[in-house]
Length: 364
Ligand code: SF4
Image 1 (cartoon, protein in one colour):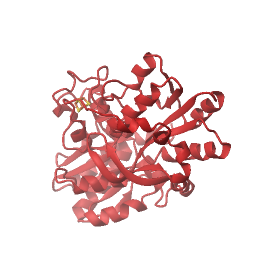
Image 2 (image 1 turned 90 degrees about the horizontal axis):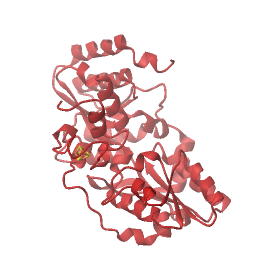
Image 3 (image 1 turned 30 degrees about the vertical axis):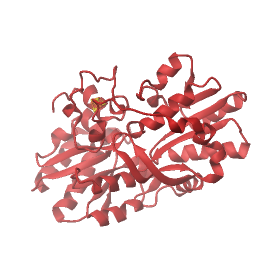
């Protein structure tokens, strides 16, 4: 299959691994930001091909995992109302809030619906004018353009019963927070290719310069990931710290300008709490004041006073910062499994704990 087989080719992967072995002279720690890359690394055993000097650590790039408990509890509270139809991507339904998840709300009679696009939620709103329809807008910059377009459409069509609960987060702010943390030691980053198809990589250049750290835009297949690691190690060995692009078949420096324009039209930056990590300044999007009529937080102001609590066993905040691995968590595979998740990183299809469990990384 074009654009798949050649990026899963074993001989090409081995060639990259041999090149890495040839050029690596010192220990380097590289963080893949994106949970999709984490899953590919664990699934295909990419880390088994690396020289012993190169260590991969997993970053916070799983949007489901970093959505704060406060927002999840707000979503659960709103979804529990009898006058609400709550629309969400399926990944969010099993993420535990303080005491339950959205699936439990649905099981209890709440009208919680899985949608594949925010435009599906608009259709639900048009079909159910007597109900409040709320769409749970989560994700990194990748999903932001479609969610912004839905708000633009709702405003253009004057749909009064449609709002969005916005919990978008952004990658550059996460990299900045990691580099400022005294507990995190990273020599280079693999940036998430799909985010960069939207945003380009111009935003990363000041970060690479400020922290003197290479950042390489990287795709999601095993050969893509090895290509990104090789480019990153090449820079490290040469003492360089530029932004590289190992995903040129999909990403340009400038990115998708119309998509960026609709994001900027609808959203503005705000401080955002990341699950298990805390508040990162200017790390999320919220609706601009001119779209306040479509803001679920303003439509349902009572949800802002909810008290939240994490499982005391869960160390997912440390996992999301690459400080601990899933197998370092005492609850991993015991109290916490995909069937009985205590934290979001065990639920999401991009979560590091779920990847380790699913692909049998039980003690590595
Ligand atoms: S294994 Fe479960 S409890 Fe432990 S960090 Fe992962 S999600 Fe949290």
